[in-house]
Image (cartoon, rainbow, N blue to C red; front, side, top):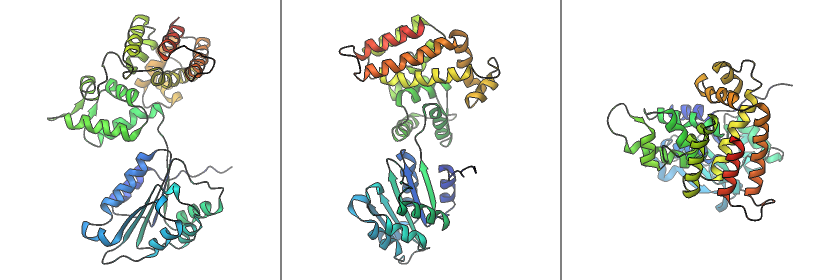
Length: 347
C-alpha cells in the first residue's frame, strides 16, 4: 500500500506567507484553533495594505452566509489592488458546499480565499467536500489539518515559541507551564506572552521563579514536582504536594494530574520494551523523545517500578478516572481519589 503523503505544515505555510507567496485557496480545518487563527490572521494583516483593505478584504462568518455567496465573493476582481481577500470564519457552519467545490475547479487567480473550519475536519466521504479538497490541492491551494498537541509535545512547542522571540527557558520552567496550562495553545501562548512582557535586559531567560511570579504556579508544589517525586518514589514529597493540591484546587487537581501521570506510565510501559533500557539515547529514540536527557526519568522509573506494577498503576488510573466521573462512586471526592491513587502508585 502506498504511504499517504503528509500535508503542509504550519511552519511551511507561514514561511510562504512571509515571503508573500499566497495560495488561491486555504482550507484550514481541525481541532486546534490556534494554528487556524494564526494563519488567517496573518493573511488578514499582511495580504493587503491598509488602503487596499476597505474595498478588497471581506471577513464573514459561516452562520451569516452561504457557500454560494462565498463563491460569488471569491469570483469578484480586486479594485486598484493586486488581489482581494475573502476570509470565512467558523466555516464549519456553512451548508451545501457544492458551490465552493465548483469554485475550486477554477479559482480566481487574484483572490485569496481562506476557509476556517474549526472543531473537526471536512468529511471527505461527502462528494462536495472531497471535490473541494482535491480541486483545491490540484489548483495550488493549501489544505491544512490543525491537530491538537499531545501532552508530550507541549514542552517542544513552548521552547520553539519562545525561541522565535529570542527567549530561552529552563527545563523545569517549561514543564511547570505545560503541566499547569495544558494543551490549549491559545491560552498557553497568551500566558507566555504575559511572561515575556515581564522580562527585561539582555540574555532573557525564563526560570521557575519567574513562572511562579507571573503565572502563579508554585515552584515547589506543582505537577512537574509531583511527577518527579513519583518517578523517584519519594513518598514524603509526593504526599506533601498532594496535600497542597487538596487545599489549593487551582494549583492542581485530579483532572490535571491524571493525564500527566497516565502519559508517563504509558511511556514507561513502552520503555520496558526498549532494546537497551540503560542507554539514555536508546530509550529516547524508542519513545520518540527529543533527547537522551528527556529519557532519564524513564530509566529511573524502570529501576523503581516493575513492568507488572506499571500495568497495575495504569489500570488503577483508569479506575480512578471512571470513579472521578461518578461511575461506581456515590460519594468519594476528588481529593480523596487523588490521595488513593498516589498511595497505590507508591506502595
